[in-house]
Length: 464
Image (cartoon, rainbow, N blue to C red):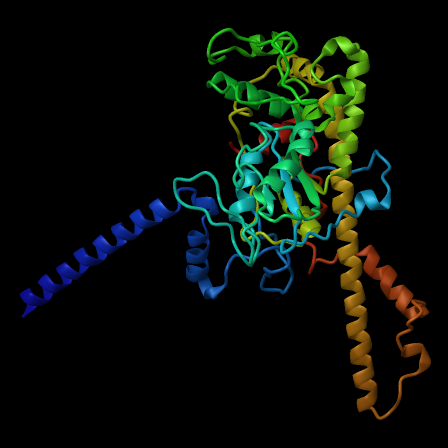
């Protein structure tokens, strides 16, 4: 009897082991990118202690009832952000009425080596949608359709592909996207759409080093069209930096020495309207005239975009995107320490030369970082104000219920004033609340100015 029992137990263990191996193989096949796989998110939700799934901002609480940081700490105690630029209220209060069920389209301008691949995958795999994007194993593109329609709401690498050319810039996208979207429609009367442009920027030195490493491994981006004013540039207008099939194995010195290298000031050029300076024909104006025009255009276009994020601020990027479009991500963004670029030992004098080569990108990034953090602060203040008003309304409701129980009516000074005029007591409460951080709604890390030094930038960006 014991031998039979032992044999049956062994068979059961073998069976369970085979089931486990089969399950692992299925998950590996269905989820080649595990960090953004919906199946793994669901499995994680099932097996989390207490049956609680991973939460976003405002959902996780510690034992004492106060909110804790749901993300892994990515920065130290750095100095607070001090604004340098003046922006109007509409510039800072950026919330759009994105109608995914209508005809609105989000257009992602993907600049090389800014973390756009990671962000692009978030857009197609990590957003809570009534009709999620359909992503299949082994396929780079996903199908992102509106609820009840066979139309896409997202124009990006992982949804529509490089429909306007490889890493199309602002000049190309703004002229190409409307016609491409109209060609996809079968209706006789084309709808009037709102196009919401978004992008991601990165610290210029880190981005430049990352592009060098990428080119060193054989990347060329030869398929880029660089269309401007209806045509691509000639060879004389846009000479190459190498004569072979690629530039693999090039040294950093060689990379910096090429005067035609599009890696220099790439972010400024890709966000500017190139037709303002004669496209790639540099004979129309001098460099001293050309680049200030491009920088002003890039700043103007960036400020007018529906949204932009910064690679060095992943959590704030997620927060502002969710608030801008009223869309929620399934899993929080993470900031991984270390990249191929940050692993390169670059002497200070070489970093300084890279900064000089990218002086216009440096100016653009300083402007973008200032605008980004001001928008974040305004969004926080608005949330705090709304939370305070909700608490005040709740207190008034409780006071009214307590007064009714005591058998007396509220005094006029205790009643809510629809005119917006507060009593002295309420004003003192509001002032006290303004002077103290609301820990329940806003964790400490929202106030930390992440990565304010070059070392922090290079050490605190995503891998790709």
